[in-house]
Length: 551
Image 1: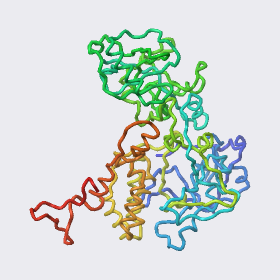
Image 2 (image 1 turned 90 degrees about the horizontal axis):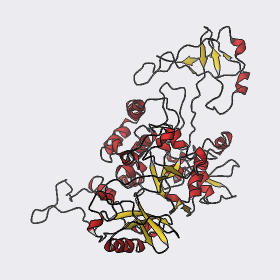
Image 3 (image 1 turned 180 degrees about the vertical axis):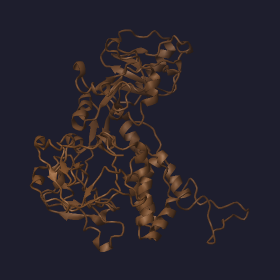
């Protein structure tokens, strides 16, 4: 098990960057698990615990890059080692058992700003936004290197073709409007469904207007002209249409209808036509290779860069096969192809998908609030403590770059962490109470996108650990603001009817699933109870409900 041996003996003169020469006084430890007491990667890892005082250290960059030259060392027995850079985290908040008068002492004084500068912004500011959860960790910093958590202004982002292209240059994400989707079935006819989409060609006469019966033309025209949709490129129509049945009763009836209304031509299109998606997740899993997704943004064949053409009929001269629509239905709007908005929509910056809400994007659209010259409030977060690289058990972080750890290991890592903590911690009563609480305030990883991500689960569990001897109302408060609980019980990014209607002219209903769950499962239950736990009943024997829909 482990890496193949390396041996530069006799070739030292070719190691132009030099190498470390270790002596018998240098102290190494093996990589063994506290839990299982065996080397995780036998013969592979050595951890130097005695430190180094070699002038060669001055030539090693303070930040490790992917293609840096290897740093080598030679043991007294002639074996060679290669240095494997490891992540060194810093304290930026109190540990679980920190005393109340020492909560803010571990917060990074500059919010990690010095590290941001040192790494040329590859590391991000660690100043955590101030909330009711972490306000006791906050301090005032006047350091010149202090960075701030992004404070956002209320601005709208126009989904224009130029702005769609700008997402690529600002974030590296492959964001496109989709074109080329086809309609194949009669049920996709605009008269057969309550919602249809029409592409607008303003000031253009239709080149081949569809021949339809008068009733159908009247119904379609009425529906389109009465739509509140203000998008300049497409108009979504939502209403039942009283068309002439003979226009949509045969498989040969046209689906991509063209209709002239005044000076504008309207063409019936696929309901996802000109939707803007982030295709970045699809790059690594696309069967046709990453290039065929990346090329649109990277200037392929003089392409404009704001749209991706779905190859429904294929492209024979480039050996691109026909793509059936089933492939889009199976993969579009999924975990790897994430909906952003429609081309031409304007949406509040806060409603952008998370992958596009970077400081660069916020700054470009004017969403970043100006800073203060009088100092910055710097906040940490509970449980954000440093790692100890000298300990034998490793902790792998999820990355969007090349994976070095199997998905099964990443999925299992949270269980290993939990087991290590619960078997080795001194606060056994606290851990047992937290375990009991976790059986009430449950999460199901299968309902959450991110089974391979460890820290977000351990942070949620720490809410229960931290409040194990506290107030249950405080636990409900933090759990309700947890993004994991929001995704698990479907209220993540849920918006009120008023908000959706004012921003999108659409009628919707807020997700009330969590409101029900927090009462039924997390607190008062379905029926009222007596102090001895028996059910309260009316004189008729019917149980008293704990709440009603009016509550």
